[in-house]
Amino acid sequence: MKMSKDIVNALNIISGWLAVDDFTESQEIEADLLIIAGHAVIPNIIGALNFASDAKLPMLISGGVGHSTDLLRHEIERNVITTGLGIETKGKSEAEIIASLATKLFNIPQENIYIEGTSTNCGANATLSRKLIVDHGIEVKCAILVQDPLMQRRTYESFMHSWSQSNLPCTFINWPVLSPRLVIVSGKPHIIGGHVPGIWTMERYVSMALGEIKRLYDDADGYGPKGAGFIGHVDIPDAVLEAWNYLKVHKETREITR
Image 1 (tube, helix red, strand yellow):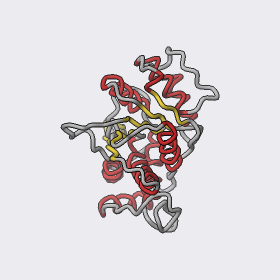
Image 2 (cartoon, rainbow, N blue to C red):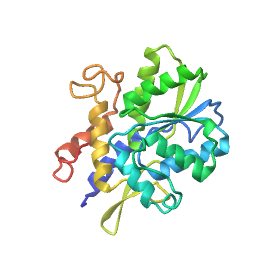
Image 3 (cartoon, rainbow, N blue to C red):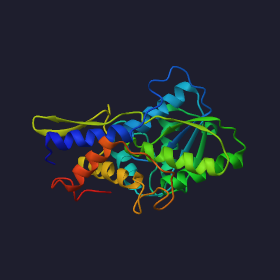
Image 4 (tube, helix red, strand yellow):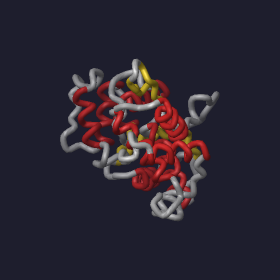
């Protein structure tokens, strides 16, 4: 996919805002739980599982069969790190696949993993994760929240909106694990930030970045109060909106939106 420096710069502005990170610069956090919302970015998932294993932190993995499931299955079957682990993917939810990866790659005990395997979108991730916690009587005052970096901000907004409506106070610490950027090398754009195979194709990366701003923008077509009402109002910085508007009309990117 051909990209100018202006397109790369605009996409980096957008992805930098979407991949909100509260965790990396923190000095001390008292977290009760790590929540992984199902997706297909393998370096992100492995990084989160490795941390949960080291920190002996209980996990809630949320994700049924949705837009990313086939991609996750494909990546698990072909990734050099995961391909030989014998992880069953056929007919399995995203949460079940990631939980299997946790036990097979990091020996995380199954009793440390809560599986929510029916949600198919960010809003359902939040609502059904909350229900699972209530049903199991788990006290969660602070949770580290992990998602595909390009969906991190919307997932956070969904969890905040859903949990606050149910009077379930919780501090969510955003952690996208990796912060993706584009760089042009020898005339070709590359995604950097993931240290092992299993990140986005370039077309999916661009599509997701543009589609996430569309959903977060509070108008009739968005997910905020003026639209679907799935999340609260989100203030999008002017620089991000300018980058988005530029990419919406540019001939190389205007037709690519998830």
